[in-house]
Image (cartoon, rainbow, N blue to C red; front, side):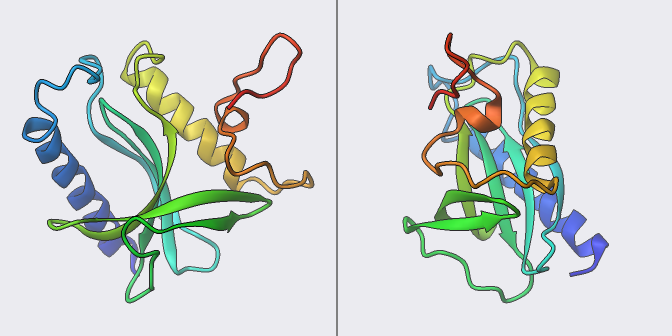
Length: 160
């Protein structure tokens, strides 16, 4: 998929989720009033079948895999591991009528641990840098997101 087509797809993703924020999510107490919908650093994966990026919203931060072309995605509600470089993460298939199918991996929800939009976006970018960097480390447990968000307990161990 050409760069322009990916930009259009990512802009549509933001538009759809801004609409969700203004309708289905309006007034829900778990919304962080200091955050807004923003797609962060979407780019094609090396295999070229998906674009990978992070969607920040006032209620969640999800790693997102957007299909490029006619690529098959996980069925809506189906979970499965996906390898991203040295990392293996659990994604769930999803679908929004106004957007289409995609796969998501929750990084944070609710979003109250972030002070503001720049803090949330910086975290999203750091997650993507870590995922995209070549790494000699073994794959993390796909059920633990503390490693991605850099959360460590008093013993220096990543927390879920």
